[in-house]
Every structure is written in structure tokens, then in C-alpha cells.
Image (tube, rainbow, N blue to C red; front, side, top):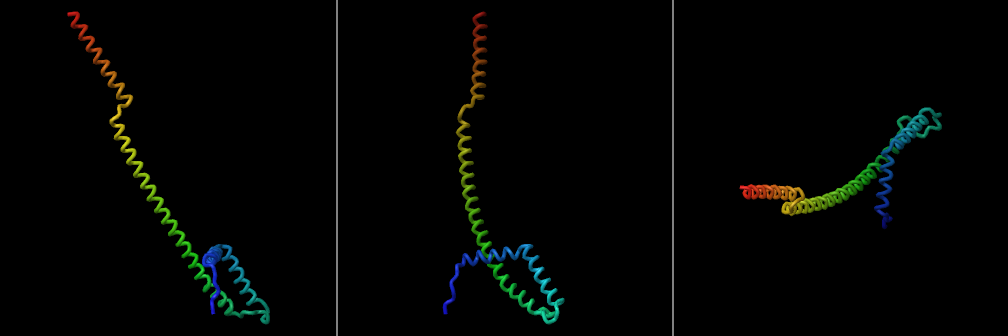
Length: 150
């Protein structure tokens, strides 16, 4: 006998949707309403209409069945989320490594530019040198003038 085949991805999505729904306040409210109605019916209704007497054995069986299916579905959803988180973390690490390499490259380029600019005369440096040379020429002209006058 061969078991029916199913798409694991579709089953995983279905289990995640159930797990998500079971983790909502809406589910808890609906479950509380159903259980309260169950209690009310089986305690307040006439005895011949009660289907689950006081110890609520049938309700316990249904809740156990729900829990036995809910737990594996929730675990499956958590495993799928952990796989997605692992892939996202690997992608984040890869991007961080690329950004680090780019940053280190840019830092080396900036350092090389600073070294290269250290050998280039700036406008302020040229002005100060020209001003100094002009002062020296003025002093030399004054000294020559004084010598001629003597």
C-alpha cells in the first residue's frame, strides 16, 4: 500500500497558518466561548439532551486530540521559521562582510589620497610662500637702496 503524496511546502504553509491562528486572541476567545457553551449545555440542559455528562470526558478527548495535533504543527511552523531566520542571518553576514570589505577598500583609498595630497602644495601654502618671498624681495630692495645711498 502506497501512502498519498503531498507537497511539503504547501503542508508547511498550511501548518504555519494554523499555528499563527492558534496564537491569536481571536482563537482563545472562540475556544473559551465553545468550552463555556459546552459546559453550559451539559450542565443546564435537560438530562436527555446532554451528550457529555459532568466529568466532560468527550470534551477532554477533543481537547487532547486538538493538543496532539497542535503541538507538532506548532513545532513544524517553528522549524520553518528557524530555517528562514538562519537563511536571513547568513545573508546578513554575507552583506556585512561585503560592506566591511568595501569600507576597508575606501579607507585605503582615502589614506592613499591623503598621502598623495601631502605632496601637493595647497593654495594657502602657496600664498604664504609668495608672501614670504615678496617680504624677502622687499627687504633685499631696501638693503640695496641703503647701500646705494651710503
